[in-house]
Length: 418
RNA sequence: GCGGGUGUAGCUCAGGGGUUAGAGCGCCUCACUGUGGCUGAGGAGGCCGUGGGUUCGAUUCCCAUCAUCCGCCCCA
Image (cartoon, rainbow, N blue to C red):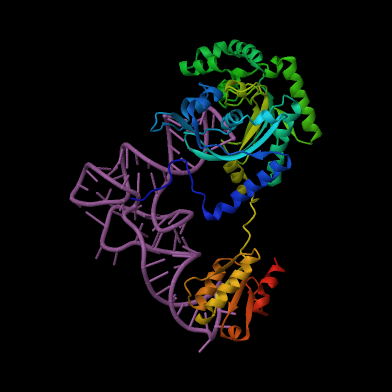
């Protein structure tokens, strides 16, 4: 019996590790420059946390959670998104007690039981940002700007933020009526399931790709026409702030998001290089979430960014930098040189440079082959001549040039060339 | 959850109802004599995804299943 990764999951192989480190470290570095601190929460939570926040009727909760009952009878779910767990922790540990706003970032796997496709996996990974405790539009803009800066730092250009506001409760109720009235004759011909969705959350209809539904939506005023004055002012303020930051954006009435906790601001960034799953990130404001899970009313805004999707685009565009080659490989030309090679390797490593060697003590030819394969920059060769003279022949693999250096100076010699 | 494509060597892929299933790349050995790459000569490696069916005979045809890819839905 041979085993393979469960459906929709992937091993992160050694050949891909540096690309992941690159994205993650670029992200965390950026987050820290804005004053964000990392938070790590468990891989699973009380399932009720997600039902309360994302909403019973959301796709994520209704059909995509990895839920299970543990041996103690607790109903749990692998985390399907990053915000609710972070807010659970914020409330549980009273992270807001210090006063002012709280800025958090995270890097986490998330799990959704959906059908795998390009850019859509059952376990994928997200980087995320949460700015907790401020109703200011400057907070919304900071999150959006950071998201753009993150993708820019990785080398992506031609990014366009798709921004929208879905208003507060009163606005959404009014808009729901408007959608249902506008679509009444069209809906009458649709399946019961489709009608039920339309009743429960008419906003879901707006981002459809079905041409007939699109046609039926023709002439429907955007939700932004129904915004309360405060919401409208917020949206306009965000627009000004983005313009000030030089960030291209577009108001997209179709962007509505699939999680119920969003209020007012929602946004996405999409990529043409991704196919059907073209969203690189999604975020927005969630002013009621913390209150809904038992915390104090705490207006907040955040974003989640997909690492796999970013890597898909970056790979497509050839923007993933190649891994830095190891510095050296210590080769023993004769068996007696073995101890010298080990001590040489130790000295190089002590200076913080990578140095490999052949634990099996193979013939020099075989070792040189390993040197070639391991893509190191320098081979440090100790044969009988070098052993007698207390020297090392250093061969630069790319050019074949070779110099003789006193053994005691090798580490410094390499250090000067990195 | 629905529709379609694809599963043959480590990788990318060809093939085809009938004795030992192929290529390129990769891997191993040897030659080029303290030293990799280049070249030449050898070699290893496949229950043709899995289970059933049709057939004298299946890796090839049919069905199922699993995986994967592309759409739909949804999203990261």
